Length: 632
Image 1 (cartoon, rainbow, N blue to C red):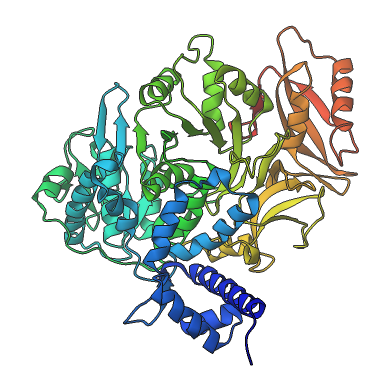
Image 2: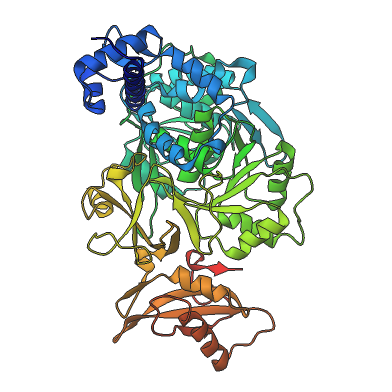
């Protein structure tokens, strides 16, 4: 029987489509590669069809097979083709469904075994030589600048890895890093990851008791500190201390190791340890409410999440000068001021000293920062200091983001008028990274909605649950949760030595991770933050978020600051009680209180009973701490 031209064309088209499907499924296995049985299962094709397609793709250089493991990998020809495509395609040009696909495929890059962490975060960038940006720019509080290239970081960290190895540090060993932002912090951290060890980062401001708890709970027997921090360490003969010389005083103690002296005397580590995707490389301590600090193991595969957050969530571009002001002692600083930039081969910009508005502006102008990430309080300080320290000319900011708390609309408005940029609010947790984002990328960007913290990050599906773990429809108030089965970027598995705290995060079963935050999600996927579940007001069968009431109160022209708490009530369960600081020239009265109560009741869903109003001179006098403070 003779094959017609039309039949041959149809057969050729079908083969091409199948080959593309096979490549896409192979990509989903990332650096670990795929077995023949995996590809047969993934595609639904027969074994004979998969073998035939693989043979053709191997001949074209689009697929390679390992001689030892017999697994299949994407080939070098695809690298060349992708490099050409990358020259004209950027994340900004991708449609939304492509960004979601990118997020779904990202975890495969950091799964499996044989992962060399220091190569990912340093060595491959050092190999670029002069074309690579510096690994670190460091600005002291006195205005002195220093830099560290990726080549220097690679050399110094190999030498310091040998120092740590001689102290007994090996794969999986927890080591505390108790250093300020600077070159020693990066060198010590990367040295740990060369050995496959686990970094335990600590704030330098922590007191002796807090440090002792983390040392005991983590099991760490080695700590890298400096003279100022050395005095806070427990007197424990089993603890080995490496002290940075000249940082607050000389190394203290007969058994201490001098950081730079030992580093320069050491021979570079010859071979890095390899890790699996599920191996922890960070043990981060978080604090939630009145709970004791929780140890959070961060696995290597979380790099996929952090990479997508940098590229998609923060819109960190190749030509950006990126600065995250946060301290690496907490999640936002460690993830997005250190790990994220190193992973992308960008520059870590460190600035020493306490927060100072003038210094922030000086750094922004000096380095030409285009992409800024900071906590809401830092933007608030900049706004409050405008009269004595106005924004300077010469700012080059392209985008600005805020993470770590609620963002008053008045602060967003000020940023637009004073800095000429739109401030984007982000929501995240140490266990998730950035989960809900007001996006910068055109395909994901939506108009600003008052009170919204954004929409779900591609790669995560967020839902609202009731108290029994049932998904609620759009507009209903409940607890924000992550659907782990439909969230390829979700990586949290549990806390270190704290099964009870882990169980509370998954109290409705393994499918849903519970954030502990009260929210409402509208029909368009916008997440409106209403407060902590622990702070929620249970009134007449409704859950009411104090943050939403505070937001409404602050839109009233007479109110300068507001804080809302729940007061027990026998009939309703709880009623909302609002403490208000009035603007200058306003006087508290029963009439104004009734007007404000009615103003709120008409605008807050579920608030069937008017809030109680109390006028105070300051929220501090009312016994309300900064976590319950909202103002404008």
